[in-house]
Length: 235
Image (cartoon, rainbow, N blue to C red; front, top):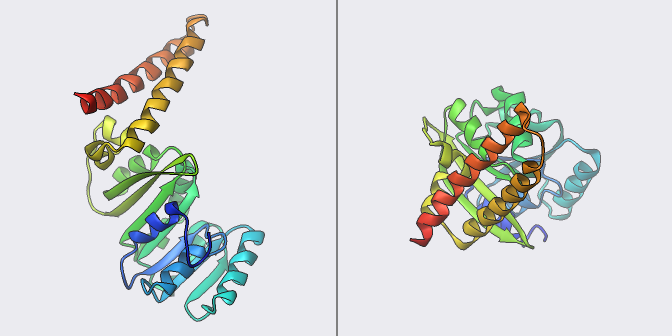
């Protein structure tokens, strides 16, 4: 992967950046995504934010190597602190982190979202907490994609401002992903069910404490939610 050729995962993220957007890529690592967006004429201005000195230095080096210093500003900052009001950022990308970490980044500096109209988020795990955050904060899921790359499965969520109501099933699985039910979706949740059934088997031998009973009920409920969708697919 480089600034000209992204991974399938980041290419999917890039595909949802509106033409002419002012984008801030948080946790930008080598700044490949902002460089790619500028090279391909999608954006002319971008912010690459990094909280860790090593990746920050890598991003600076990459932007200079690509000759994009006039287009991309690299900042060493914690999360959305990389965004300044004068940037007029309207699109934020955050990729390659867990869902809870992405949510904590969004919650830590909510004022930075003032001019933002689109969030493109790629959680490695626990996408449901992003959907929960979206409902609480008046963001709606515009699009969702699930994809597989290098034997790992990823989800990409595109949010825009607006009210949204989701069922418990849709929060867990993704309303758009349920509707499309791709092979990758089925693979992901079939594996999750297998894992949950192993957990159930292991706790069956445990004493019926309050915590164990609660855990068994939670896991059983999740299995039922997912099986309902997968079985419907097969019918």
